[in-house]
Length: 312
Length: 203
Image 1: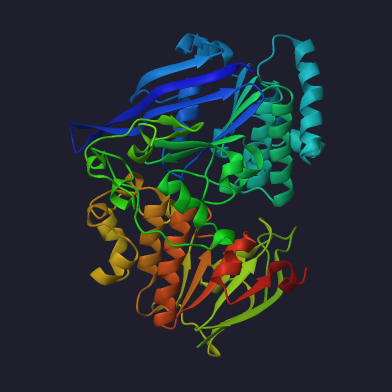
Image 2 (image 1 turned 90 degrees about the horizontal axis):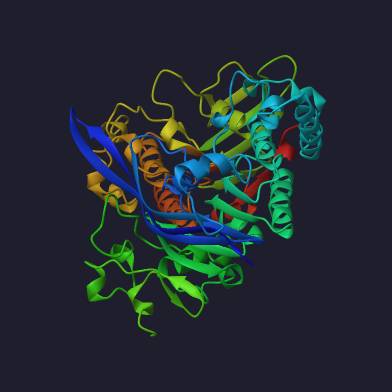
């Protein structure tokens, strides 16, 4: 099993103008480390609006100009710079974008799924594949000639899925592929993602829906306030006993089927000097307030918490 | 108090009817869940009951009386995407106080931090914004809350916090809730009773 994607200490910040010419840097992702192997699905789970999509955008090289990125991305051991990103994206690395606004409003949806072609031959071949994928998702031939504004939310999402799957990528980045879909299409999407895995491909699934992550992923990374605080195997998420971080425990206990347990506290706004969970943590130590813990390994689990450092 | 929708029928265009003879009622001491597939017309029913759509067939009444559309509307709708319901050029303090001025106690119950009030809507997360949109809907004149997928986009921890605060406030102040969701597990824990949308919609 080879390493397909490695993300090491990735940080992303934005420069924004606030009131006139005053500039302000806001950090959205801090020190993110994660890897995806061949035949593996890794889910990044975090609340919406927490900046998860930027991880996807940085892998594809489509961040806006006012962003500032540090850290290292590697694809199959090679450093993923902007040039390599542009070569690979749409071919080996494909994205299922989060928003249906990513569709071109002036292009028929079938042509968007087919994408760029060298000659008519290639176009015809891809058209056959596009038709196959569309019918699998229940989009009949009348949909081919429609423009995005004529689609319902669910249909548009299925078109987005098709645009990514048509190229048969090695690494699929799925950014919130399921919200707004009916139960049957969610099933279908989950199966497709699993199918890629069975064919040796890697998938990075970015989602806020814990159930989707539980049903598909091999490993789940918990994203909190810009930090990955825990990466654990999916079987440990059945109840809160086998996950380590107090926030992960709270998250699992908060599910309706696990008791809908209330945990107080909100994610901090802006940068913190110490552990991002310090304010709400039931097991905090003195040093947590002003020191940020590293992501370390503890019994095969990656954890960012001082309670698990030093072989305790 | 009783909120009653009787024989509601509605269609956006001639091709497809969305609602047909839908009737439901809830009391102000109740939390009723409504579950159904996406695109089945749940949100349309919510908009009709909250007074956003007026050209429908049937009637929506409060204790048997038609709801006047001039004064404060006692049935308040909370949407799935709070960022779409707020003026992006207003700071959060103005957004919150548009309808009424909540007490500090209530702000604490909903976990509203003082330093959020000076922010713009695009500087806060969905969970933070949703707390504002719920609190501003809880004007003392509000008798019923219609919660249309209010926690769908939120993480599980925030989901519990928001429902816990909303339910305790509504129970204490005799406000009824119609909770719309596609998640049966959630409705099972927050509601007194659950209605199947497909069964009440006579299409």
